[in-house]
Length: 170
Image 1 (cartoon, rainbow, N blue to C red):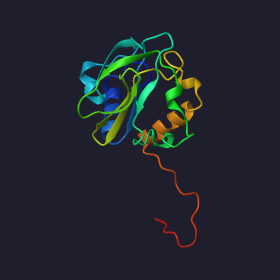
Image 2 (cartoon, helix red, strand yellow):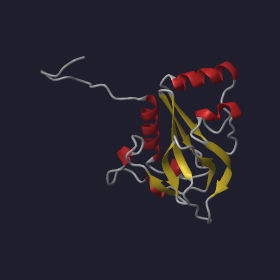
Image 3 (spheres, rainbow, N blue to C red):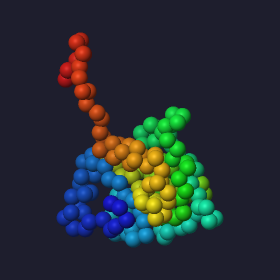
Image 4 (cartoon, helix red, strand yellow):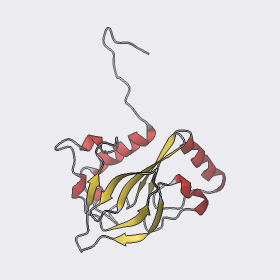
């Protein structure tokens, strides 16, 4: 859900059921983002108005939890620099105790948070995915980051393309 209101009615209930049954959902906040009060338990916290990072140069990511599967591939040297992207605006986010903060901006505000809902998971990115509020989309690390988020939310693991003699085939 990218900078829009989530679906309501039957479609909204199907989305909730999908997540509760093990699906993954990415919510990207932006200028037009809103969320109904009866669906806030799906999100990792409650978000507020847009905020600016101080200074004309903006800020950047200041903390990343490299132990999380979304960021683990970027923990090795020369594997992509997520910290180099400038961030100018974001939505404030107040997380709950059960939610996990995966990344913070240089001013300490939450950049990416996760909430477990049933057997599924919801990731909430508090800035945009285009170049309107930040420069992440202009960096070489953007596409690998989006791929990793998608793989994590989908519980995707690559199948073995071949087997050698002696390996077990399930």
